[in-house]
Length: 393
Image (cartoon, rainbow, N blue to C red; front, side, top):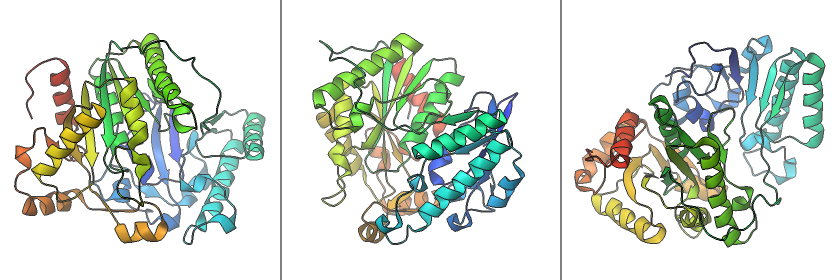
């Protein structure tokens, strides 16, 4: 699937492409008046010459990843630099073994931005820059008559909202998309649902922690959610943001992509203990929730237990489970001190589970890999539920 518009005005080159950018490729007509034409990755990413879907072992998405050399031609109208592990240009002495490449890649990104700026091309930069780097790139764009958009968002302690006397109840339907384990496609599913609602004549609003770039009707969570602030204030701020969204966009549905995992994995990988999703659940009640889990041999009892637990703990009504192709690499995670994953190809993951687990059809709600050809199935299920029609798994 290609990210296209009927009459695009600009073409976009993305560098450095990584698995984290995949959600923005799998949703058509995502960027107003622009189309992604070029994906480029450093040789060390082992993606050059492969379809972008190879980044997490999914089916082809229709973009072949190009080598860095393609960028020297400066052929596209926009250079988009995503956020990622390379975005923080930290001193070498602070790096974990195996991460020594990060500062070098940060500097490469700067060099490509300078080349595109000098050529009069537009820059969308979502990676973190120092004040001097930001000033230098901005000045080069200004000198060439091009536009520099610095999209990296650093949360700050500026008070966005006063504490409300009571919580606001949205008129729009509210849909949660969350994860039991991090990195199991929640944002991609939320973004896909957002676009499907929009393309089917509904006004949708998406509230997320991920970079919105220029996507229509996407908002960020209040900064206080990610900073040291009073928990009651965080709840009021989230609720006030939802009120702002309703007053600004008058949406039919608000899709909330819950940041962080819904519960801890173990005592080493706590996933924030599910605090942020809990605070959001106190700020607004969901009418429908999709919950993502890692690829594992889970039986019906597991899904039913999670269904009941999330309803009791958060008041989250789970109506659909997404089973990703991601499985935690425990050894690598323990060695690196952060979560690392393996990625099964979709068919292998599906076949492996089917050989071992024989009762998924008895789960209270539908269970499947939403990204494996089931996006429309999920959308129809959501819509039927919100319209009060008979649900058909």
